[in-house]
Length: 125
Length: 131
Image 1 (tube, chains in turn blue, orange):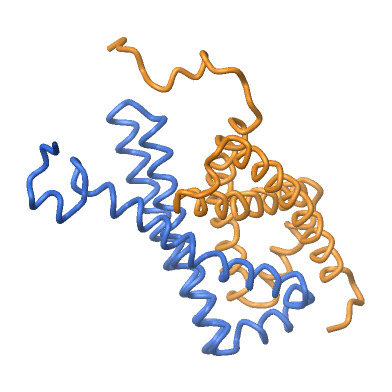
Image 2 (cartoon, rainbow over the protein chains, first blue to last red):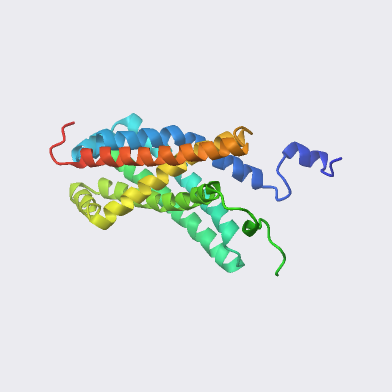
């Protein structure tokens, strides 16, 4: 016998109301990152790292720039979600936990904006 | 606030799969710092040839090279073990014998892929390499 309300069963979110979406987003970004990171890493070491000119020429192509933007945004989100789980599991003081979670959010948003900006500069100049 | 806390790690016999589990989190956090370094490097690239040359010079010091190898391993291990976790999420491969075997496979794959990436990266960076 379940004590859950019919609405609770339909929403399927658990007692905190948000846990499943966090868990699920971490898996969705993980799946997206498998091809994106593999493609980027292989491209870097097989040719793009050779010189500044080769790197710019490669990242300047429209489809490479779009995939690179998708990569950094997905990476930033996956990293943010992961750090949140680690901080929530190992940091117990409310003050320290809140400070670290805030810091992580700011750093991840700033890193995502900086990375997208850099790729756009490379692609559009 | 001294309630008993679960899990009671001390009562379990040590198995290497335990280290692989915590290593997934450690490499994940390390990969976060690697990501921040990657964004710094992207900004240097976008700032022009001089700043890119300065960044690459900074990355060529022995300490930076060691860190790069560490970040590469962190990323590759997290990538391989992440696939293992995604398979587990489907309910497959959770039996003890399968989990131990896949753990061993992840360690071997991560070490081999790290070596391959570092080798290819060094070759690409070597002066005189042709496109």
